[in-house]
Image (cartoon, rainbow, N blue to C red; front, side, top):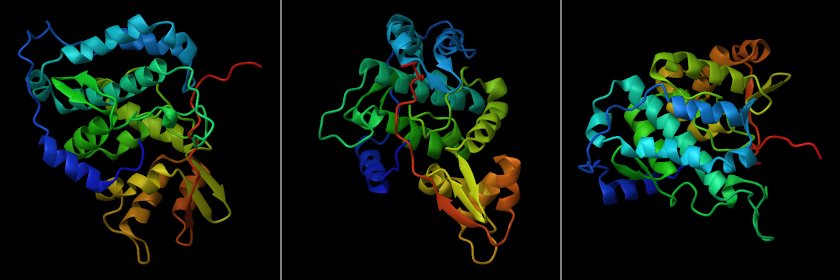
Length: 279
């Protein structure tokens, strides 16, 4: 979920060639695309987009069991699934492994010289590019899943409203898994929920302040939302306005259609999306 450097993508892509290798292990009877076990974990520990990490940490066995199911999938079997099943699988994998990364380091305690916020996923060394997980015959990092599998493989910009970086500033974590049959509805709903929040969009006169996610990844939305920018607008900025028009709350959607609207970007809140506990 962090802004990604193109040079790093190219270097690693060349080094690894990204060819999935089958483990040769016997394929389980069938992967559960309803994600029942994962759904039970999310239902118990996700509260209005925030996560009860203390409770989740006490249930490590259940979380590990869900991860084992992702690891058991054969690479060839995953490649043969319909597109929606594959996309749901990789979004769920990203969010699941993010939860595991937090739980494995919870409670997060930063050193005195660490950059803030102190209770942030950014305090976990190598969380995006060095910690590895097993999924569908591959050993992957979170960056691998987002930037080398999902973004180039599916070209679905709404995933930026679905993958969760365990931060207050990111789109809310759904209290249910993404599923192929519901994927379109879920992606649209999470986009609307996020852009309706103070972390997603704010208006001030003729200024539309939007999440920095759209600054970092706005180009991913161009093919669908900004291919014909109006005079004076870049394709990225045109796409940002069309996204807010399509998914934003009424006031923001109306402002996005104003030819004189100014785009600004909100500071990103990296504080951990832990549940708020009474003092």
